[in-house]
Image 1 (tube, helix red, strand yellow):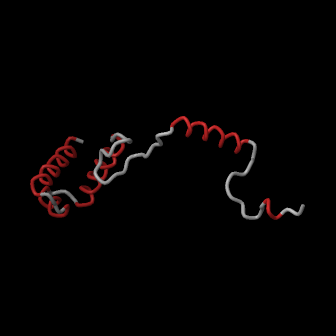
Image 2 (cartoon, rainbow, N blue to C red; image 1 turned 120 degrees about the vertical axis):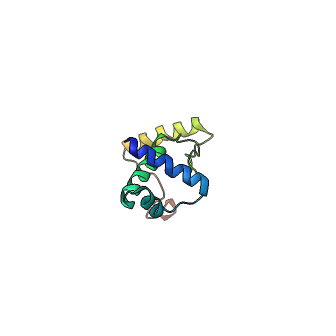
Image 3 (cartoon, rainbow, N blue to C red; image 1 turned 60 degrees about the horizontal axis):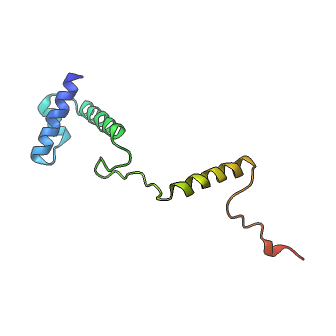
Length: 104
């Protein structure tokens, strides 16, 4: 584990210094297999995503969660939707039925 942390720190330092780092060259330089390096870096990336604040763009290129400015309306609609689903009432557009098709 300490070796992984050291490798990640070296890779991050080299990345900050040079801007772009070849994983293959870095793996050869450190004497580790490229697949092992990719596994370590992917684990680091996954952990950073899991610990990032979900509502902010903490990770570059990752979108945050869009929330509604109408929280009360949203909560009331959610309750209504759940009630309709519990009563098995279909919600949405059904083209097979129309009030204009009825004969009076």
